Image (tube, rainbow, N blue to C red; front, side):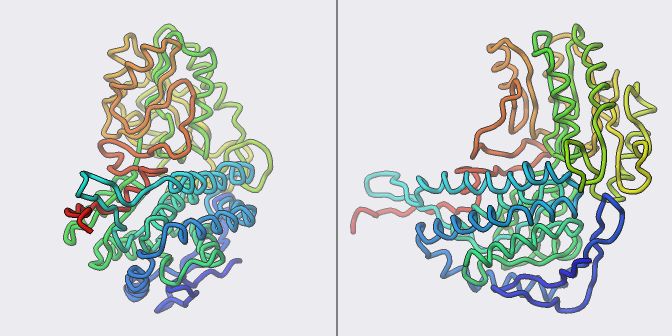
Length: 475
């Protein structure tokens, strides 16, 4: 069993101020795989103090110095990619093939994207012939990240904070902390100055709340549930710090009558990926009545033939959900769905042959209406709701009838309709016809899906203050 009790503070691995062991559970087996410590106020204060102490010098380093260190970080990350893949597979149950290709790949892809965006980025912009606008690092940042895509979210926050000259304290999810601890090793190996990056493990009520309300923290960047995002915003309000939030979603996947023949199949596969544990998953499939029966049959077939198994197994399959609490929440929502809609695949309990581990049957509900619980709550598991519609106007109304607004999807061969519908969907992202987003594209949502943008130039600007200076040309 791994012993990972220390925190990374001021360039060194240090023991917690007082013992507070926390068991990390392998969701594939329900067995303890590691022990970490949950931080106390003294640990949080020490990490923030280190970040504050390093800010003046780090914020004044040149763009070139930071580029060199970020490039080294990418090299270390790539050299130790297999370690990272194994860590994420163990801690949160991502099948090892998915972990290597997509979980690890997300981190390196975003780091490459920030390096490209940073290459042409200017911290000084001419406003008039005699006035300059300066973009300056906001200061000490608290980075609070989730368990479902660990490296995706850590890199989306840490890389732009480092590039812009901020210092930081990372609090990764306490139930999937191994990848974050490994990332701290990468930072150390890359040679970043002490105090620039710090890590303290802890839970939301403890270290998370302490960071959110800390008077010496200038910004909180958080990814997680809408409930937690609201709590963080309230905790941060007394010190008027900037809060950037990437929260939940309930994405609508609108399949029009002229969509690709396999659109429903692709949508179901996408919904079940990562065991449904993605905030941008297309969990509401809206299908034109002319294609509805076909889509229901196709999605049910995908669910029935999606293999579920341990994260350590090679090959394409989905693993467990991350924890017992998450498993129980999903089971309760499936039970509610069974009382509301027509179950066409999956259902309650573990898949056949899996008696231990937090495995959920890929589940499909048909004849769903948008007022049902299963259509409104973020399940965060491999559960798909299929909703019929008759007109473009009805589809748009259903898609927008949600408190969330992260990612919606449009499937049609009519380019004019595709663009028209995309403009009317109230979400930060609209993916059309299965075309993925480019490197550096802004990631973020409307409404209760959050208020910031991550990735590329947008992600860099998130960590900067704007300063206007008159009389610049006088010198």
